[in-house]
Image (tube, rainbow, N blue to C red; front, side):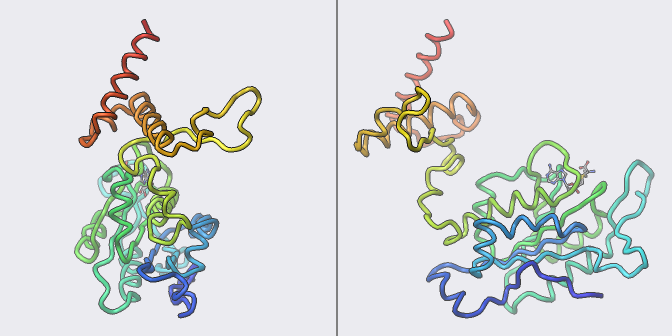
Length: 282
Ligand code: SAM
């Protein structure tokens, strides 16, 4: 069996690890796929830089490296009949055992994320929770999915999280894994240069983001809202909060209904939007 080549190795030089800073810690991510090239996009931008800096260890494994026949077979026809092929249990067990064997002594049980349209729906709360883990493993299914027995087997060795990125069906787990890896890893302290940029984002506290603008102040006859040029920080903060409430009420009332900590000012603003909307539609 050939040694799967890591996209970037975990063993960062000490000086690079030191540059990560006090309190920051490296998370290790393994991805198993029959299309390792799919994951190449993770080498770019902020995630790629986090890997270079040693804040994130990212290893991509080719499932076919864990097969022994001439054709590197990873799938077979389903028992009970039906369309499509099913991924065989043994290559998956060998790949996952390889990952387990390579983890540092004393590491907690890794979390195995199995992308599946039948999984729990991934959201920002789950991303925040998973960002606290030491070691995540993503098992990218293809065809009709993976033999259930190896998923059950893995559930005894990993913290098992079957995870959907939404109510639609993709061809494979690679894109879903990339979505989750990006959402999770940007929450690791130090990955995003300015941590403040995480605080008022959509979904961070259950509200969507306020509208944003940059120079010039007037563009093709459209002006930036006056208040943003005022320098009055308190008034700007209230304006932004109101826009977040308004947008969420308009686009995602389901999110708003879940919020239990709205202030008196928030509730008054929502009532105002509601009556303004009523006036417009009358
Ligand atoms: N037969 C499966 C079903 O009906 O639930 C669908 C298999 S799908 C064609 C192949 C693979 O794509 C899945 O094993 C999973 O890895 C991935 N996938 C498809 N849709 C997904 C979604 N919404 N979220 C996460 N992964 C998905």
